[in-house]
Amino acid sequence: ISFNISRGDTVALIGQSGVGKSVLLKHLNGLLKPDSGEIWVDNILLNKISFNKLQDVRKKMAMVFQFGALFDSMTVEDNIILAIKSLTTLSDKNIPNRIDKSLDLVELNDVKHLMPAEISGGMKKRVGIARAIAINPEYILYDEPTTGLDPITTDRINQLIKKVSEKKKVTSIVVTHDMKTLKFVSNKVIMLHEGNIIFNNETEMLFKSDDKFIQYFVTGENK
Image (tube, rainbow, N blue to C red; front, side, top):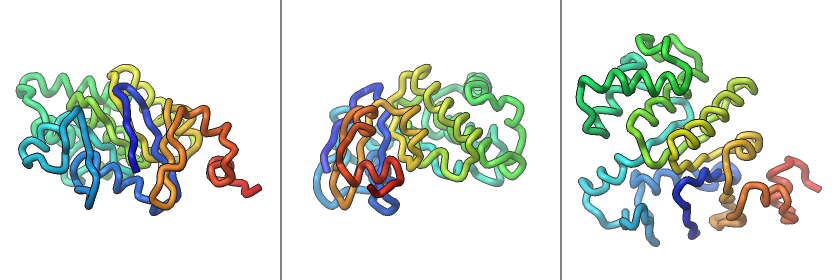
């Protein structure tokens, strides 16, 4: 597969379960290395750079995991502090303000002293987004951010992804199966099928495609 993502885009990455969407995300931040081919980020070839240089690239990226991926033994605040201290050079005196701003953006300022077990699944995902934006990334990778959420919480997460994208001017890649999420947050879509890209275009064009498989995937109806 081969594709480019432009700065400022919000790209939905779609396809059937097991097609390799999450694996592809892990290639983009260097957690996995390809057996062949090249991955470029900001004109830097990730395949062959040293670990230290890879860490410099990763500092521009944040990842929001499917189930929040918070450390259970740490408060919400400490989860965010860990990301800030690991990936930024922000001084200790400025960290509290950064945390408050990040939690304010996801409307969760009242949970920072709580443990992950004390908040809901939707809140955990919002904390995951707060942790991601706290490092001021240029890129955010979302791995199925609305999976398992009720419709109201899903809508809230969609609104949040769009707000972060527009307010922070970040480039976003969103792995999703949810057509409502795709329609609301993305301006472009890449669709994987059997190891190939079968669609790479603007979001609105996906719903106008006359490809039978794409229609089946989008509508859930095999006509």
